[in-house]
Amino acid sequence: MQHTRTTVLLIDATRPELATIEHAAALLRAGELVIFPTETVYGLGADALQPQAVQRIFTAKERALSDPLIVHVANEGALEALVTNVPAQVRQLTRAFWPGPLTLVLPASSRVPKLVTAGLDTVAVRMPRHPVALALIQAAGVPIAAPSANRFMHVSPTTAQHAVADLDGRVPLVLDAGPCAVGVESTVLDLCSEAPTILRPGGVSLEALRSVLPDVQAAHKSSSLEEGQKSPGQLLVHYAPTVPAFLFDGPAEAMRKAMLAETQRRRARGEYVGVLIADEDVPAFHSSGAHVYTLGSTLEQVAARLFAGLRVLEETGVHVILCRGFERRGLGLAIQDRLLKASGGNVIHL
Ligand code: AMP
Ligand code: MG
Image 1 (spheres, helix red, strand yellow):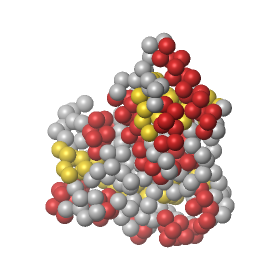
Image 2 (cartoon, rainbow, N blue to C red):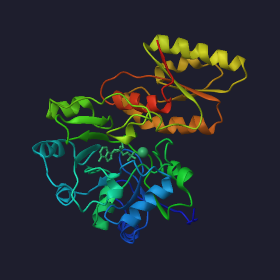
Image 3 (cartoon, rainbow, N blue to C red):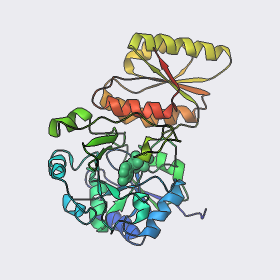
Image 4 (tube, rainbow, N blue to C red):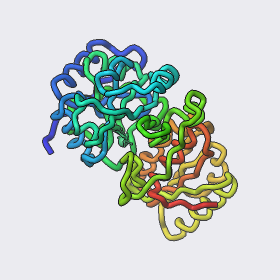
């Protein structure tokens, strides 16, 4: 692949400097790629209406062309040009959750390049709430197609450094506004099926969606690579770290015991073990000899630190990562989904 010099520019997360935004927007209009922060994860952006620019996203990420992209807009009005029909529920949802981590799947208009939708007749659209993302999309004056700024099948980036680690030399510009607040990707909600259906759990919870639309259906189980898929992001191995991971799932005390026992077993074989746990588990692992990464104590903290934790453990050179599970409410559904994917289905039910 052609080598590009990657420039990283610091930008204020709440009051982005105009000159930096203008510079980035000009690159996007010229059909170049820009990595930018959103409240969920860092995105790898291109002008969604220029097929050649969109192609660059797939090349840089080594992403399969069958995996459609989310189009980012800076206001609800921009939706009109991208979709053929705005169902009645859209206004209710956007009023409650836009700007924010909710992506809506709607019937695509003919203006949307087939590369963006991976040939589907639907398009996924979201209005992010990060001030840098909003300012950039506004200044570019075009909708921005942006998947997460990681190499295909790797862990999503929640800092500019994560994005650079994966894509250095493939993208001219990275805007660095510090770590992402939400830390897991957006909720993808399909409004083209009979009932609104969550295709990917994310930053907006099922409970919150149901408070606006009571008939929202929960995400179906992650499917295997072989099965046909409505949403390719549902691939079981999708957010994989580069070392094997195992998910321990059950009551907190049982998880701790099983993870400690597994740590001891593996250490006896000479393996270096990384554990991804919550604050309440830390005392139990004090003399375990494992490399401990704690995700915090609330589901919000866990979501925000999860991808960084996987990357940190990966970089310390551990042979294996043992993760604990979390409760299935609020952000917990998205956390559980990402842990399942990171572990590629290696789950120990307790
Ligand atoms: P990411 O690569 O992290 O931005 O993830 C994009 C997500 O949106 C993936 O789960 C995609 O499968 C999903 N997606 C994008 N467009 C569509 C669409 N038209 N229909 C269903 N899912 C979509
Ligand atoms: Mg992604």
